[in-house]
Length: 342
Ligand code: GRG
Image 1 (cartoon, protein in one colour):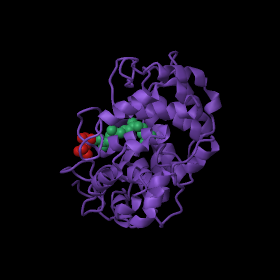
Image 2: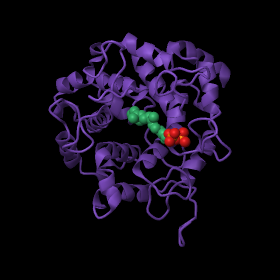
Image 3: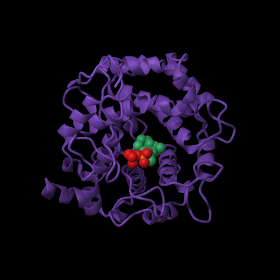
Image 4: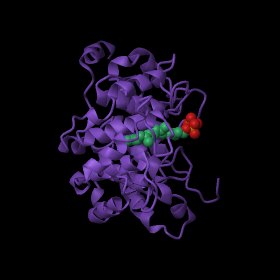
């Protein structure tokens, strides 16, 4: 550990520090990291904005400037790159649409071009969704395609039955999901598959008992979750695991107070921001998913906004654009069971 590193752990959420940290990210143009992360700048803005919105401090960013920048990253194929001049990819198209949606600015983009781009990435033979024109397939992209089209009320442009079949093929004996058929179960891929199935109204294909148990077993003595057995805990799984449990109506299977302690212990008391685990250097990705995890865990130390467990955006934004939030939307047969579990 570097000399002089501040090892004091905070038991409170360092709101002002985190706001300053996120604001500072765009001003670090003398740092190598700024240029090394250029390819994912649009997602960086999404992570920062989610964190600020949940803290109710989004006025820290210049809304108009952000919207103009995001729009400048749209390409002629209708998709968005991670920065202007970069090739389109579903990952950044998702982040761009989410940022615009959070700002109530979806009407600033030609939705039909975005929809054409996304629908064009479904493989007509297998139904799988590609991440970009080069054809990588992954359950992440199935979720993203479904989520983006739901924003534009264009789900019929996808062959949803084939997507559900593909997601089912990615399900393992432990109830979890991998990045594709035969892939090891991983909590982040579980989230993408559950979120995809939730939007498509097909959570019936999930083995709820087995998957809930597998997810709950991800919690380690530190209070943090790992993403798969025998791996280290990481703050981002506070989101991937708790959002999955929330979609399953089983968030109470985790010890939420210990999750909160773990996230708080990974804050950087000097610079602000949250790291993957205590003592490490913070970044905006873990800051976002740490704060979103705290919101899902019902953190009581600060009035965080509610986050939607499917879209990872504030519930109020989801409802403002006319979508149904999944915060309490457990399928009816499961919600009846839930009373017996508690
Ligand atoms: C709207 C929240 C949201 C997301 C959009 C892009 C996406 C959809 C989801 C990403 C899901 C994903 C697979 C995230 C990766 C998470 C992660 C920490 C991977 C690291 O994996 P390993 O193998 O780490 O390096 P472990 O923890 O297994 O050692």
